[in-house]
Image (tube, rainbow, N blue to C red; front, side, top):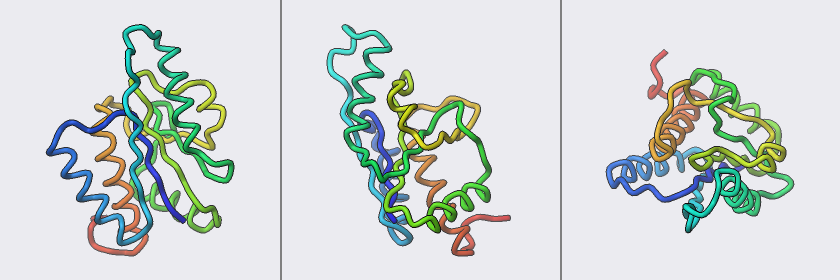
Length: 157
């Protein structure tokens, strides 16, 4: 199985980018992982929120195959602690699927078409974080989940 994280817009903070790359490298010891960045939509001043979500949604869905499991990182998604998240990962590993795609949407969330295609939604916190920080937090949680599954000392119980 492989895991992909799709996000809208590049990370322009060099320190955050360094940390993201560090956790991507660590995660590579456990699973094939990729971070796929969709460039920011141009000329958003001329688009409504709905139009921006539609355009972003089209770009997201173009990267998803029918066989992929699509999980949205959404403020209204199911929240779980790190132990439960590691079990969630294990269930997907056991299911035999080829690829899970997690998606961080744009500033206004997801289009209706993306919600309709999604298999589930996960929430990282009730708090709001920048989309750039969410990338780091999510990749770190993936890494943490795999260390829990491997019974390694990274996560303290």
